[in-house]
Length: 117
Image 1 (spheres, rainbow, N blue to C red):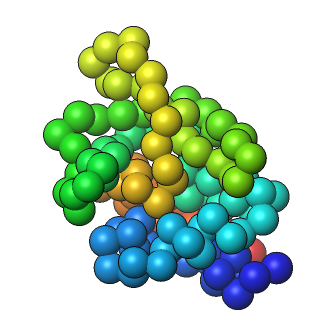
Image 2: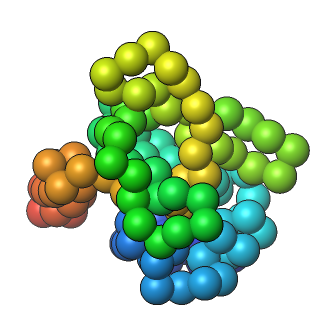
């Protein structure tokens, strides 16, 4: 397992794409199995957030919900739905920024699980 994969199982920064220009490269060089494990932990189905716009470093105004994971030749993408319509699209996982409520919920669950272990 890569160092990126090991560290990512215990800690995740959803805004890493904005500060680490090699973050997508690190993700893309991680095995598909590890990517799927990270997606299930840090980007669960039902999470609501925004995608970073192509060619920009700012999240879109549109909210999306993660509805699944799409396996591609190089790895996984998020299958996301617009909250206000039936339109679907794909988003690279590291370009998906969760809403604060969802982000805090996941961090709270992880803290609780650590306390219970």
